[in-house]
Image 1 (tube, rainbow, N blue to C red):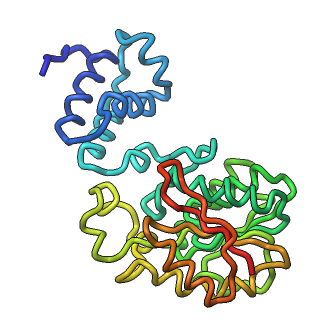
Image 2: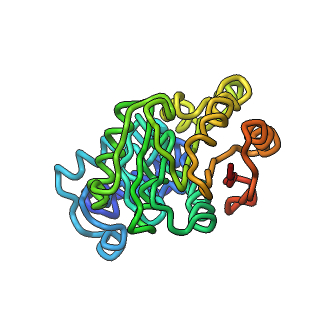
Length: 284
């Protein structure tokens, strides 16, 4: 391991940070170090690379050191940064919500292909609001409702809607799935908890130790939430409406059978970028 300069410059800090993150078994430690330092300095990674000899102000250095310690402790990068990207949107995140993942963008693609101009959209288990807000961004005439059991998650989703200029077209409720809803929707989105309880100890520490188990674990077999959701969907769907539900690897046949028993027809099972069936498109 090469020695890092003692000077408090961008380059010196990045060198030390990269070594610290590498020792913590972080993938892409140098890249993550740049992201963290850019956030701490209110700068960009491009600016850091352009001038590695620039000094790091003391306040930014202190903030960077705290962020590094958190990341070296395997707290998710998005939680340390306080935000994450999804569908081209910059969303606030917190330990009250799952971190939006690229795989879930498959649901947005499937929804827009199956129902390109929905007027009323429902997002069950909204979390950060990522699915609902991505659709609202793409469909200017739509109005959406996001529901989450966690008050902190619903509040965060509302903040994201406000930051994106979408608060006038979105409402967020704290509820157990669809309990307070009586209307019908052209499009229903849902990314339920689907990790089997026995799988949780085998997940990465970033997920296992930091992301909310309430939003991750779907009972002993990972299917508990689908059993709750399936009978709720048909009464909520407007004529011609579709529901797009995320599933975990290998869950397609079991979830499809639960949905069939509830009176839903499987229109499409769309794979994510890794080729894993991810978005189940259903119609009553």
